[in-house]
Image 1 (cartoon, one colour):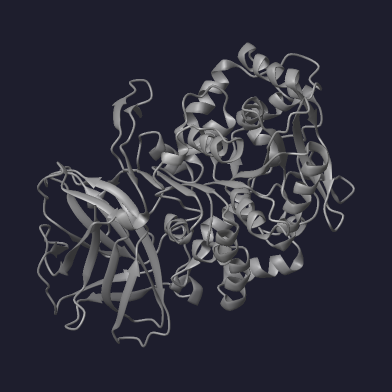
Image 2 (tube, helix red, strand yellow; image 1 turned 180 degrees about the vertical axis):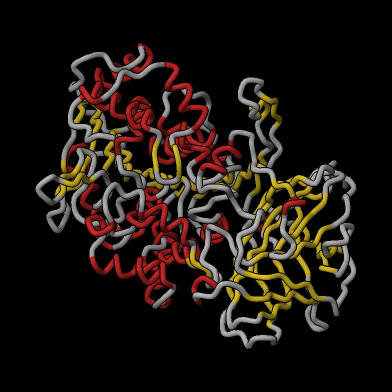
Length: 615
C-alpha cells in the first residue's frame, strides 16, 4: 500500500466492503492486513479529524463520526518520550469540565500502528471515556527514500522496537503524564490487543506512581519465554511472522542488540541470554507487583493460539489475586475480537462487549452485573451449530458455541482419565489407547519430515476460519506412518453428559523415547476422529530432547496445551507423534542433519500413557 499522506489516497468505503471484512476478518495473512480494513480505518480517521476533502464513509459511519465530533476535540499529537523518541498518538478529549476517565490504547504489532482500531476509539468516546491511542516505539510503516534513508508513515513512532522492554514501560508512563496534563482524568485504564495487551500489563506493573486503575488484555502474552521458547523448542514461525510485520526492514526496526538476540533465537544459540531477555518482557515476571497494586485485569485468549499459546495465560491468571476475568474462545490470535475492535456494525461481538463492560464497571463505576461474573468463562470446541452456505460451501454459525463459567481454573478439571499406549489398535497400522498398561512394544518412524499432522495450515488464518465455524479437518488415512506414530481408541460411547468425553484442562503425555541422533524433537497432537476417519485437532505441543545417547532410552513427560473440547459419541480419540511442524524449530534442522530414527516404547517402570483431563 502506498504511503497514506493525504485523503486522495483513501478510497470511499462501501457497505459491501464493511460486510466482507466483518465476515473474513482484518487479516489477509499472518503478515498482512486486508487493505480494505486499513482503508476503512484511515477513512474514519480522516473524517473524524476533518481532513477528508470528500465523503469517504457510508451514511451510518458518517453519523457515527459526527456524534463524536459534536462532543469531543480530536488531536494527533506526537508525544516525546524520555529519550527524545516521538510517539505517534491520537486523542479524543470529551468536551466539558466533568471529570472523565481515560482509556489508553497502545497499538498492536502492526505496520499501521494505532490507526487500525479507529472504530474502537469512537465507541469508547461514546461510552464516556477520553481516549489516547499511541503506537509503541519503532512500530509502523517505514518507507525507503530514493536517495537513501527512510521516512516514517503518519501512524509510525520513532526509535526502534523494544519488544515490551523497559523503554516501552517508560513510554507508557510518559503517555500517562500526557493524559494527566491534557485530560485531567478521573481514572486511567489501559486496553490493548496482542502487543498492546502485553505492554498494557507491563506499564500497569511498572508505572512508578501506580496510576493504572484497570487493564484489558486481548490475545495477550503473560510469559513471553514459554510462549516463544518452551520445552527446548523455539516458536520460529511466530517470531518470523512478527519480524515481518513491523512495517520496515529489520535493520531499521531493531537496534543491534535486539537483532543479535533475534539471530541467536533463530539459530538456537545463547539460550540463557535469549530466555532472560524474554523473561524481562513477561508480565508473569512481575506477578508480585501486579498483585500488590490490585489492578483489575481482564484477559481474552483462544484455545488454538499460535503466537502466545493458551497455557501460559492460564497459569498467570490462576496466580493473580486481583479482580480478574479470563475468557477463552475458539480460534487463534485476534480472531474473536478483531472484527469487534475494527469493523463498524459487524454484529454483536461478545469478546469486545464483555471487555467494554469490564471497563465500565471498574473505571466508570457502572453497576452492570460484572461484579457477579465468574472469574473464568470458556467456550467449548466445537459446540457451535452451523449450516452450509450454498454459494461459498463454507459453514455459517447458526448457534454459538457453549460457554462454561467457572470460579477458577482449578475447577475446570474434575477428574483425570489414563489412556495407556499399546502395541495394536483397531487399525492394524497403529497402536491403541487402552485402559490397561502394556509394556515391551516399540514403534519406530523416520524423523525429519513434515507430515499431514500439523497444528495449523497457517498462523491466524486457520484459527480465523475455526472461529467462523470452519475448523481444519484432517484426513487421517493420509498420515504417513513412515514419519509418525499413531495410537487411537475405538469408537467411544456416550457418557451421562451426552458426549463421549468432555476434555477440560491440560493433557499430559509420558513416553519412553530413544533416537539414533543426539537430540530429537517430538510433536504430540491429540485429535477427535469421526466415523469417516476425518479428524479435528483438540490440542498439541512440541518437545525437544537434547543430550541423548543414541540408542539409549529417555523418559519424556510433557504437557500439551490446555483445551476445552467435547468429543462426540461414536468418535475416537487419536494421539499422533511426529518430529516436525512448520510452527517450530526441530532438532535435526538445528543439527544440520536430514533424518534420524525415533523409537517410542513403553518401559516397565513408566508405562507410556496419556493423562486426559475431564470435566
